[in-house]
Length: 514
Image (tube, rainbow, N blue to C red; front, top):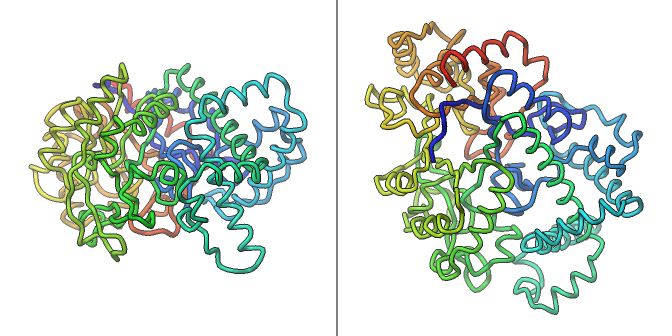
């Protein structure tokens, strides 16, 4: 797969403005699409859209298929007739700059439960038919996810009511009959939590209805959506509970080894993600049915899929369960070749971007290039070595790649230059930019200079985080790897998107034939 020469913006929907403390799929999302159109951008890249868990991280989700209910727009629920005007017209005062997750979740959960009650009372025949069709189409994941969430919330609420620690926080701590998914136990749970299961199905229906409406609007305006698939899933998720045999678990249903990456430029002790690892032999026996379902689902949601940690399809860093960090892991072989062969036979078109950062070997490059998946180049990494650095644009081997000033794991470009880079990197960056004809003097223009370098490069696509378009410092950073506090919170205000910035971005795009 190769893209035409183009550009786009990286922005997670939680960062959008709204009156409800967190960005969502409401009117402000459509307004952002209009900004992309105005500035001649072809792509909107997003982070994963699943329900978030520990640390509010979009890469740590209770489901690889479900959507995050916090992204549901209360304004559109009002238009559907499932909220009254007084429900939404006087929300609490939220920060405009950061997502206050605890406060937001409490408020929006109350609204969502009100809307569910109205749905049951006032649903029209058309709305009911749409809901039933959605449930039937998505039953392969939806029912088990709804059961999973209902049981989890029951135990959490019981522990909170009794003022004790939740001893059944993870699915592997549930009753043995449920852990092992005995049919009779599942039937009893479905009857006991009938209402709660219906509630979670309702939330997913609203999420996907609003999302697909936004996707249609984006595509009608020639803006394509780039989604994001984390290669691994969270242990305490509906995916692992429902599909235990495709993960490396012991007889107690606990992981034997967990995912991470060895020490690299992000962390001296590596990154210990803690996700369960796949049983690739069992996946192969099942003809990769779970992965095929996952790709199919995502291909319906977005136009292009960015696969996070692509190298894990060639081999993965297996860390013994219980380790304190990721240093003492070892590489184990995956079956990416076999998986993508099945994908090619299944799908007419597989638009995948390979996140090929980190420890990349010739074998990983071969797997990426065999299926013509474009890789990623990060300009902030360009100045750490010398002129042979592969992230410098003059060293790109072919045009089938994407250039980023930085990703969600990087500092903002201004923050990188001021706070994260070394003196040698700064001097190299200034010298290099000036030698290729881009005037760079220091932090007052380094961001747009690096954006210009990306725009001028041979890469088929260049992606700018919105924080860089706005030339923001480190306090607008989205994530610091290997940390859990203060991440995924940044939000912007629309008055920051000035006419001057829009003109500069449009000119950068037009004059570089993107």
